Image 1: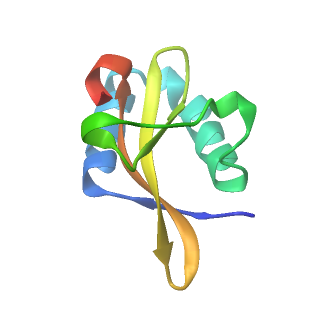
Image 2: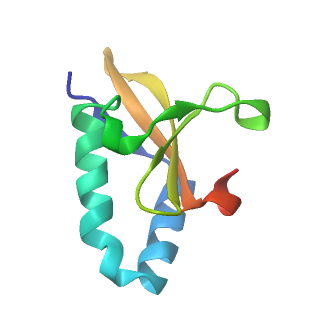
Image 3: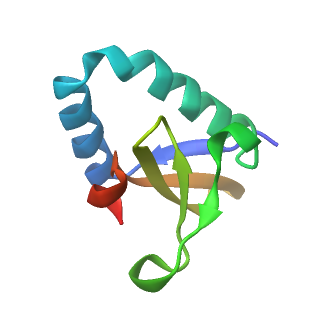
Length: 93
């Protein structure tokens, strides 16, 4: 089931900052977001539930040390994915 991707303002800032310093990763991030929309459980994403302060959120891998934090939500009557943050493991956890 394809889900809409909704970008929070924080995710937008994180993405702009990341791409400014790592412009060569744009294609891989776009491919990861496409895969997340198509199948959030795909093994290549290594999606997992988070605990602690981020309980209720999920994270997936967008590269070796790049993570995307997201949560499932409803948008216009359908399940969607709200992208909350992007950064290295240490930055987002």
